[in-house]
Image 1 (tube, rainbow, N blue to C red):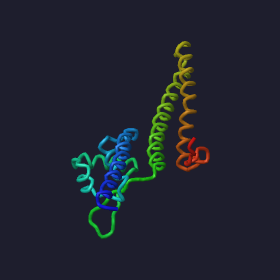
Image 2 (image 1 turned 90 degrees about the vertical axis):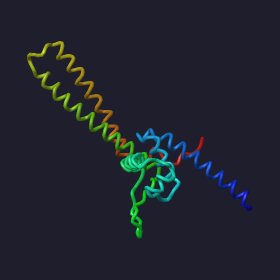
Image 3 (image 1 turned 135 degrees about the vertical axis):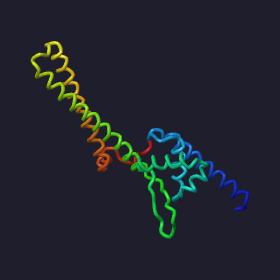
Image 4 (image 1 turned 135 degrees about the horizontal axis):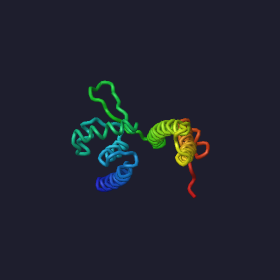
Length: 185
């Protein structure tokens, strides 16, 4: 291959990478990641590892913005800090397994949702129990409290299911029902 053909091939290669980087960066808002951090992750996805200086240089980001982005990506376990031997600078590596990224992020969110809502339901039902056992509460209010207690009791089914979904994803059991490899239709 001559130099001009090789140069054209490199340009096509870079354009194709940029297209994927742009798409990944644009969809990172689903993970609660700012567009700049999304660009950071998408860029790192194609690299073996990057130092903070390399990230700043390549993405032309401010130090505070980049640090915030890296920290958010680490919280979501989409980026890991590494400590290569023989160097004083640590590097960062992007998680390249999208199944793992999905699992970690959504399971964390679902765990948080279950915990917060189940705690609120338990507290509310304890209050409702007190009202139901209070002879001074009117019949009308008592009926309303019973209805709302049952409504909350029924909502627990969803939260238990969500908890079970997260557990099946973490254990890999879900892939028995919904395999990772899906054939084109």
